[in-house]
Length: 415
Image (cartoon, rainbow, N blue to C red; front, side, top):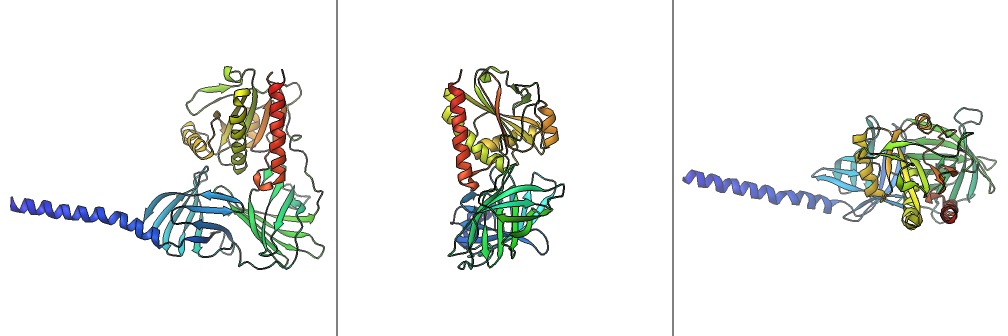
């Protein structure tokens, strides 16, 4: 009996020691990390890195893209490892080495097959590309852009919007294209060299350029670790793209949209359902992997809450990289949690423009994710808006916000 009691006491002491040590590991590690600005970077290849800004206040880590702040979810914390999950997209960082001012690991895009990019971060560095310094020259605010050589199959036009702080050389802005914008970009313009980047959990963008003798910009655009293209820009305050409501339309002989797709519970939803009859309806063609769709979803949710009682309905048609109903259940849950989406979401098919067009054969094509199809109370399509220029485009986003609200209000009062 004596040995049994001694054994029990010894076991209790061991268990007590283990229980008391567990929180100490987390507390010690959390307190050891530098609080303030951090400089993160993704190694796109052996010679090219994509930098972005981070901030840590002792409790929350944030990614900073210009005016945008993205709070990271801390999923696990060990003595020498962490895991951050990004909202909406579900991609994550595995951080395998930790020091007071040093992190190393990898970013994993779980939406793609074995897509990993080496990552590191340094604490105490409050810059993206290099230390801040007064600008040596000015930078035009608006530019006409051509991506890829104009005679190539991959060529497409754009508009660059830049804002330069002359005291620090910091540049913020975005690129608009006919299928959407490149969201919040930030970087620097020093001498004749322009560098911009953004990382939002789905897309990793890097732009580099040199100003030429004629005032134009020539450079490279990198997206992730596999894709890049040439771009050239000329200052042009009157630069324009084709109107985004002129690019997609109903084929001859059609006035209405028709579909039937399952929601996360497996129930089919259709515009013929009672909840949509006699309502103004916005059909959102989107995907959970799409940053522009994320921006559009936030705006549509705002208008859904504002106008629902007056007769507005919205339904999202999700075209996913992995169009499996079981996986879609987790996707829908994440969209509702991270974006606050309360309108119906259905699984429409794979994330492929050609396949999406087949599922909506009354349209001439699906040119972009997202695409918003606005339908009146009689079920007739009144407008199709291709792509989305989000809050990173400033006044262009505000103009679209106002135009969409006006159209919704006009259709709601029309009989």
